Length: 330
Length: 170
Image (cartoon, rainbow over all chains, first blue to last red; front, top):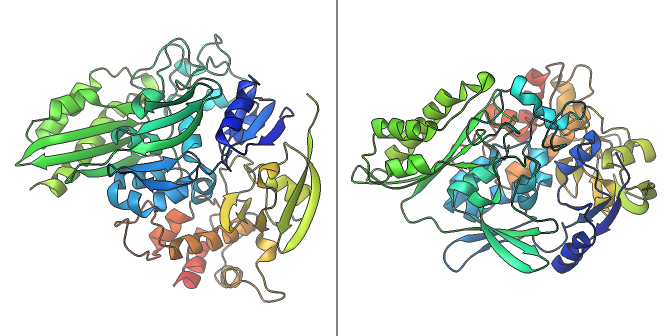
């Protein structure tokens, strides 16, 4: 690990200014991903700016019925929050299915979003990886592919974003509030992470020095039910092979509204907008759900080692929609 | 860039400790290598095994992923601070009674994790296997296994660990 300086920021503007002055500086939240990457030699900033004491650790109801989640709210506090458990079960379930109790106690909301999109080759500095060293190629294209992308990948990178929380937030139409030198901006969560294209080194649309101050969750209309389902290689404490976050409203046997996001399938949380279009106004039946899943997966480009994910996504998505439709039918 | 040294103050198992550290030092290395508190164990050093689990301001965390400099003035409890003199913590006693270990390397992390987990359950925190997110927590074996999944035991002593925790929990 290369030496680095450490500063604790006292206010948001100060934190942003410290990064603006130093292109090699990084924000430090819970550290669960960053400290690991420092140790692995994946990254080597020369200054860490600690942003955990900026008063961004609150969860507040918004006037419109939504909820504002501060950027440094710990994952465990967010999952345990009453408002979140009652209004956004999909988010509580996603958080609780991620990492371990110990990690959730450290990890922050902003840090969870900013954990690196990654794979085993990214974390192994002895292997080529264009995300770690731009232009060095992708080892996964001829290597271990079990956890890799089937949607939106490029020849430069087939890694997946491992967050569960972000998948639920994508389905909830969450908005990321960001503070930079030029003030504040709001980025829809579905636009926050990037597809790799020919710049796999860029995971998100954030500029250097921009700080996540909060994530806003819009209110869910009355009657909407939500759920998160994660499929993995062991029962707990493992990344998703695939996951589904869904929000559904069924009226008179017809899909009135639906939002779906997929995890473990792409460089970013994957909003399944093709499936959603297919479903709105359609009968809430297993046939419709299968057709919608197939429509979304028509764009899938699996590689040899992850072809199993196409039927796995289809089956998981249909199962989640069926469960939700049985709960919401009225 | 040369190594950067900083002053850090920690309260460890009830004792105030002051030390000068390289910013790169994890809480785990500060405890083990600098303060001689070797209860917390270094297993993977990547947050994957839980052997380094301590209570940081009352919450269980992986001390290998926490930079000591970021936790100045923190209150830390390791497995060494759980007993009251010669009287073991109820979880320590229960692990002995139920044979909750073989080689013992994961045990300090298991026990600290269990202490933190019981506090979380008491506060009503649900888990990934809780059917109802807002109902009071009942610590079934399935709940204990899920909530303790951040602590691996390569000897496979789970058959003793789960009942050891269950006895204290119920």
